[in-house]
Image (cartoon, rainbow, N blue to C red):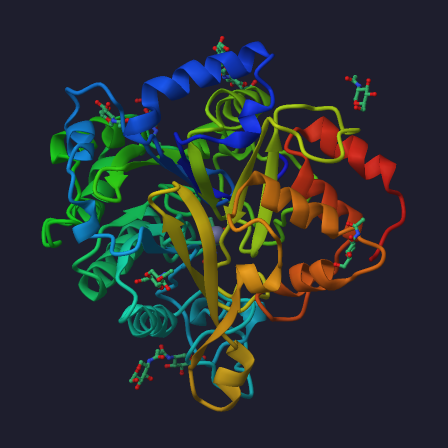
Length: 489
Ligand SMILES: *[C@@H]1O[C@H](CO)[C@@H](O)[C@H](O)[C@H]1NC(C)=O
Ligand SMILES: *[C@@H]1O[C@H](CO)[C@@H](O)[C@H](O)[C@H]1NC(C)=O
Ligand SMILES: *[C@@H]1O[C@H](CO)[C@@H](O)[C@H](O)[C@H]1NC(C)=O
Ligand SMILES: *[C@@H]1O[C@H](CO)[C@@H](O)[C@H](O)[C@H]1NC(C)=O
Ligand SMILES: *[C@@H]1O[C@H](CO)[C@@H](O)[C@H](O)[C@H]1NC(C)=O
Ligand SMILES: *[C@@H]1O[C@H](CO)[C@@H](O)[C@H](O)[C@H]1NC(C)=O
Ligand SMILES: *[C@@H]1O[C@H](CO)[C@@H](O)[C@H](O)[C@H]1NC(C)=O
Ligand SMILES: *[C@@H]1O[C@H](CO)[C@@H](O)[C@H](O)[C@H]1NC(C)=O
Ligand SMILES: *[C@@H]1O[C@H](CO)[C@@H](O)[C@H](O)[C@H]1NC(C)=O
Ligand SMILES: *[C@@H]1O[C@H](CO)[C@@H](O)[C@H](O)[C@H]1NC(C)=O
Ligand SMILES: [Zn+2]
């Protein structure tokens, strides 16, 4: 992949009119028959992909009556739970908790006392631009989430990787510290939100070394699962949010490869939590290197192309009508991606074989961004994403005025106005096209000032951002880059 940051994907099995227009292709026939099979059972998946690689969570429900999840689908009184067909959930990511954070140390020493040669002239107790997150920032974030969601009936949470800080595999630290960090973050999250399931995935910084994958059935996955099964299984949850997956089933896949499936929306929807690190080109390098400057447009592929091809075939062609959304992160940017099955860059308007990803911003301000998280709404009747609202903390202001307040940033539907009431591939395609609108700068400005969540935008090239959003196949991306030659933007 050209950029890999997404994290979760939801699949849907409802009538999807755009597919009806293409009944003449084999693929569509396949889709339609597949759809018939799954229709009433509402197959939905949530895919989560994590840092620098992708980690994915996917949720699916099958019609075949013998699966416990599909039996749950038969429950008739969903109304009891979903008053008006809408459920809400939080997507947050890239916490990068750093136990070595020191509020006096400047960012050129990564805010770590062990590395510090001098102190800064101001204290940064809530976090510092250019460094990973102190405990204080994690706690403030959790409090803000709790505050904001108090009247919202949040049903679950997606946490798309990188719970542990960068550069942990150093002389003064090591793999055990990574596990400690993950344990601390997980337990804080669970104690703040004991009544909803939290679905974490593994990030490239949550491993025994940077991008070093553990062997299957390794101790590493076992340990992660001891931290995470309380969050995923949520045995303290009230009935309608309690997870339907059993511990033994969770262990089967998690201990094998750090991935799992689970159900949401009272069994109506399946979320698949994937471990895309297995597809990452970076995994070959077994030593930690400083990849601090990784950006969505580093113009490097994130996944081996053979995995990209299969993934895109699944999400953009074979099952696009079943996928509600794909929730990614890792770039630490508020961003969007299209996955097109076609690699023909001449396609300009709507490609029916298209799928989309939402990339969540980070909590860690390390890539010169403000901490942010989002709350999404999902229509469980129409099986569609409807909207999301994003919150952020202005770290410079919080530090200057010693007041770590969180504020509403924006609501997607208001920022990117459209006649389409859903967040789907068409909507993201429209957003992408409007980035090059010569008579209105609105979408472009909104997009580019959101990427770093209201911190100063990084240097960028407009057409590179446009091409990265539009083309998942690396060669198509490069062709697109050649088509638009003027830099800056
Ligand atoms: C979830 O995973 C279990 C174990 O691999 C599998 O048996 C089950 O079919 C999966 N369920 C769904 C809905 O994918
Ligand atoms: C549905 O419920 C949600 C959360 O309870 C609320 O935010 C939303 O405004 C409601 N929508 C309608 C159309 O009533
Ligand atoms: C932070 O670093 C300063 C020196 O750079 C040191 O005096 C102080 O004790 C450190 N604080 C903590 C909490 O370790
Ligand atoms: C949460 O709300 C309480 C009371 O309204 C307020 O005192 C506190 O500062 C809020 N916390 C955050 C992190 O916004
Ligand atoms: C870390 O270890 C390496 C090799 O063991 C050594 O060369 C280096 O000086 C050490 N660095 C620090 C900061 O201790
Ligand atoms: C995986 O297993 C091999 C062979 O047993 C071992 O050499 C290697 O260190 C293991 N890797 C990890 C990350 O545990
Ligand atoms: C994909 O390509 C990579 C790199 O060439 C290779 O290591 C891997 O085995 C391939 N995977 C599959 C499923 O073909
Ligand atoms: C996609 O569907 C086709 C049948 O139309 C099948 O041959 C192919 O194996 C499927 N690919 C994947 C990755 O599921
Ligand atoms: C790409 O799309 C354009 C416009 O639809 C078409 O004219 C062209 O033949 C296509 N190229 C390939 C290689 O399919
Ligand atoms: C550009 O934006 C304006 C204002 O929103 C809109 O009226 C116009 O149709 C857009 N142009 C294109 C080519 O989409
Ligand atoms: Zn990260």
